[in-house]
Length: 223
Image 1: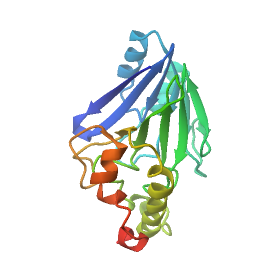
Image 2: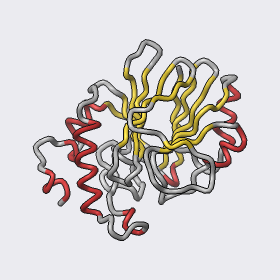
Image 3: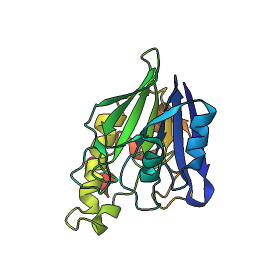
Image 4: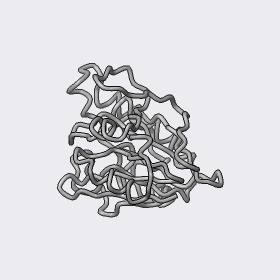
């Protein structure tokens, strides 16, 4: 198994490439897909899945072009939104096999309703990494106000409440030694207090990230 982050500074965007035993996956790809295809060719691997953590508001994804060029399957978390391209809508807890490893979808609504993280389980069955999209950043969490521009009745307060529940019910129970791979770093418009670090451990985030402070009530978190 091999994992590589692909950082694009002008967008503070981080795509992730995972390869195992001849199969690869890309998480939150940018529009320029050649770099992902070249990486897969370097490892003699086929891109099997293209995972999206949510519908993006800050950049144009390359998921459709990458799927067309490689035959990979686009995966989103649970959503009722209709797309004009072929997509596999996953369920909470659903697992996807990439070579000898698994990615488990964890539905974490809050930044958006369909927001999801992906938990990497290695060849030995050990949980190794968490690809958090815009749910959990290094030092911050995703802003909950963007969906208002799409669904008027879905207020920022409602989404913040969903995010509070997602963090406490889905993220905090996970192991401290998981490596956290977010989709953005410092400078992104998707959060305010993001670190310049591109990875962390979940244990460190439990200690340092204000949004994971277990003493916060739901009302305080929303405020």
